[in-house]
Image (cartoon, rainbow, N blue to C red; front, side, top):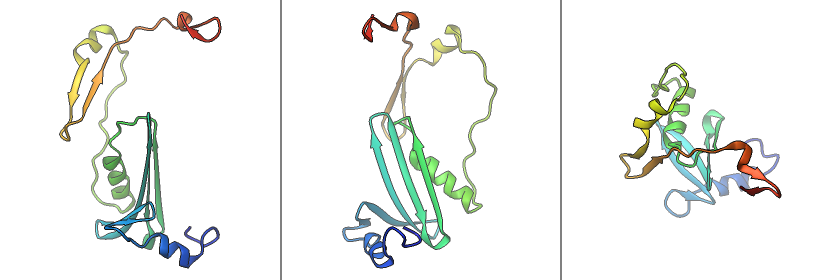
Length: 139
């Protein structure tokens, strides 16, 4: 859409022109950090995605995630900040350790976020050799 090979320039201008608030044919049109921004999001159970375009800077960011509870706004905002050499929240650093029952037990339960959403962590023992037997049915 940036080069008018798929969509003509006039059609792209129409697609990205808001008609109802900031909404324009599936795209949200707004600003971020003083820059014009176009956004389109998607989600299915277990998956979320976001496409962000900064047209004047010819920057497009695509974030795909197979965790439907991911904080996409934070991820997209941080990646955008990185692209424009602005401050961002760095991921937490640490060492990978084996997860034993003793380590996991205090972490299990419900976590409530500022927006009111709740994430539950559960321990579900699975015996892999017995998971699928016969005609792909659960044992």
